Image 1 (cartoon, chains in turn red, orange):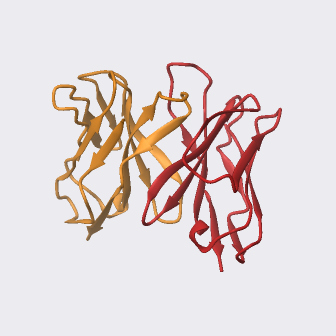
Image 2: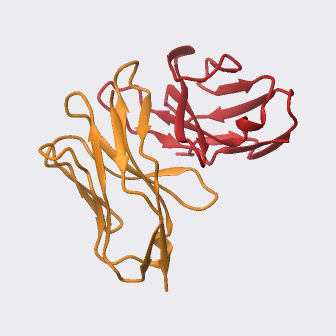
Length: 114
Length: 114
């Protein structure tokens, strides 16, 4: 099976711009989660989508949003970028079985805000 | 709330040395526990997991035993290699909102010298 793919791998933006990141989960996985990784805060949960519905959301401002399509692919959007949004954004997919929480991660998108 | 505490890094060892990375958790009930590894420039990979108390997860020479009496899941390897240099994360699933997200420790950076 192909793994989780994320595009683009690297992005450079300036403050005030917006950005869209894409994630394709493992075939058959219906849950997609997004995490932000920074040296200071570590790995922080952004949100999770399942069957096109946001099931859970972390403690991030409304500038961070996401969606999931019928084929389970997901996008996240960050509007009005700030310097502090520079991070590695990781996407993870998992099986829909209730008792199985293992998540498979993509390589991440490295966002740099100048 | 649920949380994971990992020993602070970085950890520097010589090749063939014994490795222990401590992880303790606070959670309601007895969740599955995971160790993830992140190699330089990559996303996270699941290293091993344990789904119930007294389970031992193992992979690539690494082991961790789920100890409910001490709420711990310490990672061990008998003889590390240079290729084990990476950042290691202990994690548990968060059940408060959905099945879809993990709570991670801060990560422990391991450097193995030849």
